[in-house]
Length: 338
Image 1 (tube, rainbow, N blue to C red):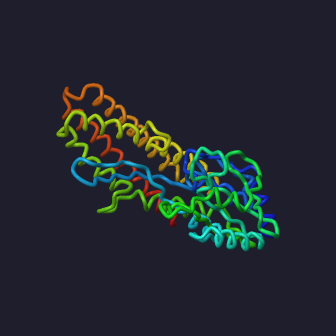
Image 2 (cartoon, rainbow, N blue to C red):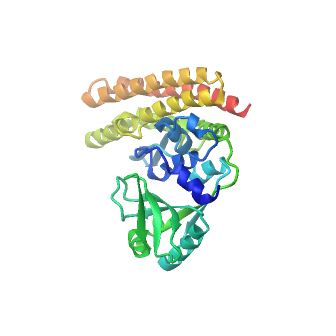
Image 3 (cartoon, rainbow, N blue to C red):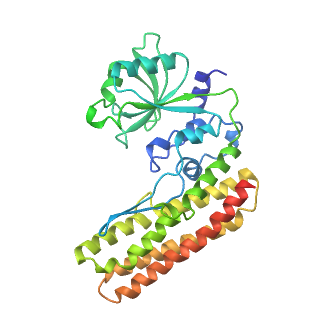
């Protein structure tokens, strides 16, 4: 089967997962090429576990400025490498050279994922799109518009117009991945084990790190003293903290729910019951995250009454999360590496 046939095969029935992050949406395309993949449900949680991963990031730039976020642990090309699919990150500031280069690759039936295309209506401004062939004159490209779920044809001039080649946004424009599909693609089990280990390594405590449990420990130190800030600033902090813990689609609670489902599905694929205790621990941790969220709500409702006690209660939930997840992650890492 040549590259073009493989790409056409993997385009069929790909799973849409828009809330996770546009760059990882194409994970499901390549998973479609894995042997016996039809036996596995490419659920949102599976795409999350393989394409994004569990994390928590706390950064404090100065005494009163901080940011909490969730960050991706897994890089697209590394994920593909564990399926024996090679990907190279490329960028070309000259639009004509950009067209020439991708045209040459596509004539060899080598697919490309490119970004920042604005020719198609999309939930994301920087839409990733799969270019999988072109005509011999390179005047148009056959592509797959992920969000409309349609095969489309885009002209060379349209492609240039769709990509942002401005110098002011050079870091975000006209970049793509070259994808080389091998004759043999590795089984998904190897990829799953690798993705789980990456999650474990990112989350476990590392001094000086802002991610994972280290970030959560730094957050506790900040939370203990949050009441010293002016009322308006304090209230702004609380709104941000609430959103990251539970309110937004990429929150700690939402991510842990997906990660638990990913572990449950991985347990079946890897045929191991050793993960059961880890799943139980993450369910306990999820309850602590819910309790932490409720504590933050309590602080927001009446931030003048017993504020020190309320903050102490919230910090204790954070400490419980760290204890539970540290134990679970160490066990999980040991299982995957054994």
